[in-house]
Structure formats: structure tokens, C-alpha cells
Amino acid sequence: MTDTVSLETSRRDLSLNCLKFIAAAAMLIDHIGVVLIERGILKSADPIKMSWILRTEAGRHWWYVDRICRCVGRLAFPIFVYLLVEGAVHTRHRKAYGLRLLFFALLAEIPFDLALSGRWSYPGYQNVLFTLLFIYLTLCGIQASFQQPVRLLLWVLAGCGAAQVFRTDYGAFGVILAVLLYLTRGSGRQLMSGALLVALESCRTWGMAALAFIPLAFYDGKRGRWPGRYFFYVFYPAHLFVLYLVREDLLG
Image 1 (cartoon, rainbow, N blue to C red):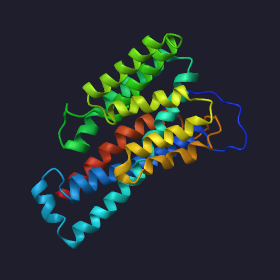
Image 2: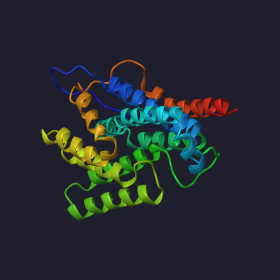
Image 3: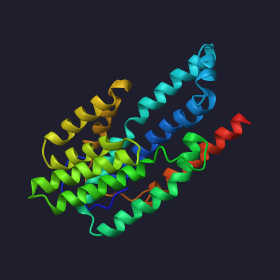
């Protein structure tokens, strides 16, 4: 999801596209848990039905599978945020970058709502591309006012506020994580502080999100050839819509 240029690194061999592929795979596993297992098999939208299902042996089995899926899925967001920070730093087309995030955020909203709520429109919760858009705008503001602490703080508060008001996936936490990674970029503290922050946020899944910083430590600063820039923008709404169709087919 980022526009970046090659950086001078050594003894690293994971490209930007490779990291995005890891994040996309983790996200797919996470959404299999949410869309197919929680919203489908376990009927999480109906607490009464869900409680009866969880009393069965099969229900408990699927609950454990869901927990595994959700734990694996915690790796996706930190990787995407890290790469977005890199993209915000290196892109030469700031306006186009932001417009691309906005376009695909809007495109993904209907599949996101269908997958999570079963409705064509659900204003109570917005997809993660809106979070990434607010992060990007916040970072652009920070870059424009880096020598002015008050303005910098106002940009951070505005980004956090927008994410909370619009109720985007990960909300203000996503903005805070991105700002931390941006301000510590180029130092030995970046990966460690980021891992600590996401571990605290994902404590309900045993801090699994911190594991995302293991592949990030091997980032070589290069884009990589496959599968291309727009694959990941398209993959996000497409896989959500496919999972929604699969769930509807399973439920009959």
C-alpha cells in the first residue's frame, strides 16, 4: 500500500511487496475467523444462538479455530502501518497517494459492511483503509510542521480525533502507532517501541501483534517485483466480498 524508494541496507532480504504479502495473508486468516467462523458458524450477531452453539463440542472446536485465526491476524495491521510510514516519507506524489487511499477506502466500504454486518451500509464502523488515510494525512501534517511542536501535536490530536469520530478500524490507536514509528524512524528504538505498543494493545490475544516486527526487522528497503502495487488495494475489498458470498452460501 505504499510508494517507496530503495534504501541502503545490508543483510536483509524481505522487500516491501513481500512484507505486504505476509500482511495480506495474515489479514485473510483473520477475516476468515471474523466473517466465516464468528459471524457465520458461531452466529456472533445473535448472542443467544451463539451461547447455545458454544455449549456444543463442535462449537467449542470452532471457537478455538477462531482464536487462532484472530491471533495470526494481529500481525497484519502493524506491518501495513510501518509500510505506510515508509511510503509517506518517500512518496513524490503526495496528492495522488492520498487520493488513492481515499478511492479504495470508499470502494471497500460496501464489501466491508457486508462481510461484518451483513448490510450494504453500516455507518457504525469503517474499514481499515480509512484508518490508513487518516494516518497518512496526519503524517503529512507532521512533516509540514516538524519544527513547530504545538502544530505537530494538533495534527496528532486531529488524526486521532478523526479516527475515533468516524469509528475506523483500530481508531486512534492506529494513528498513535504510526506517529511513534515515524518519530523513531531510523533509530534502534523504532521496532522495539512499536512492538511494545502493539503488544499492549493486543494483550487479549497474548500480544501476538508484536510478532509483526520480526519480519519488519528484515525489510531491505526495496519494493520487489511481485505482485505489484495495486494488487493489495484490490485484494482488500475483493477478499471481503468473496468471504461474504461464501458465508451466505454456507448459511443457505
